[in-house]
Image (cartoon, rainbow, N blue to C red; front, side, top):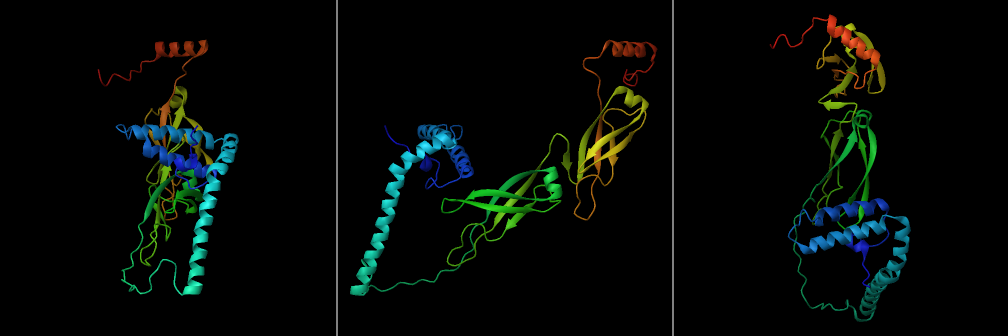
Length: 300
């Protein structure tokens, strides 16, 4: 049976990697060889199967330990021997230089060619991360892992300032690709995506939220509690409010970058009971008999 190097299949140099690095490597390879992207390539389909097989084994601690024993015996030992041979070659070259005054394999009579090259800054690397509205509001530190030029995973700690704007970029100087001919390294640019959730939707510096009320609260008016970021406030609902109306609360939205905040905008939605009780049915039937209100009168 042919032994498959699952680490190599995932683009990893050896088995000295964390579960997070395995997960990131799997995503990269799966995206690269996905059949939907390479529909005309039989190789990509087979490669994609191997990638899934490798991740299934390496993502489970028990199966990974069993696999690593075979990997160390077959692959790890060979890697160690190759390293020793390369080191041995270096020792032999030094020995040759000690007695004969030149490096092994080099002809000192050959003229040295030196060409001065212009330093060039390395390319920038761009990536993006998702944060919640509350995380962006208060700020946080977030760890990310990226594959470096040498193929290994490198971790970064990103400090996200409180009140950062959606799609704003954070620059980590010198963390991009290496410069050439002594030039400076490029930078790492991280775009921040602020994700909406079930409670809030961010638009500019305003926060939108849904305010659910009953038909009788809409008719009679009421006072309800509503959550904002970091606190709960009480809101007066005027009599006769309709679905779709919006109530604006100043200085309860997202940070505006000037020490203030945008608005919290509550979108009113009048809800009816889906399974009313007998008493509720009698109540609504009585209202239908005595009420002369017709919301369609202005369109008939």
